[in-house]
Length: 151
Image (cartoon, rainbow, N blue to C red; front, side):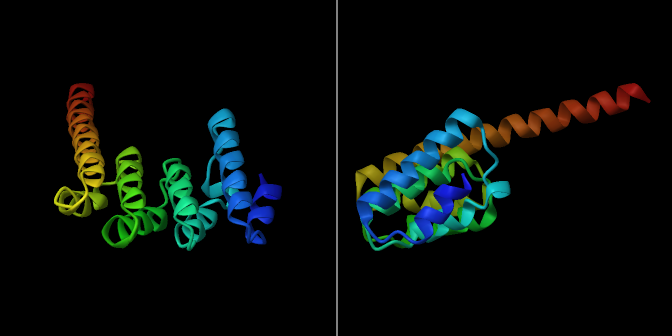
């Protein structure tokens, strides 16, 4: 993985960057790699700032594997401000996959985006986050009941 990180840091060709990001995604999905331990969060953040729409879109796909708050904040920024509605939509999708509650306000605002593509993904992401929150709340309640029962 380190070789791919070094490779992408120095790469300027958009097609090569996309190819490297795809390789990283493939490795992560096949090997269940922890992003933070491999330093990939900086690759995601940098790629989300790339001038190429295609690189930013591919970076949102990679971002789905991260739980890092810096990545979440960058995705929120892209959801709110990116000029490309595909980037905004896929940022919403990634935020839903990550499930961090700090994205909820931005996703709610994105349901009013001018592009249906964005509103659709934002609505779905909100549903996903709400399901995760409900499940988490019920799980916490069950844990509390179990603790009381043990005493």
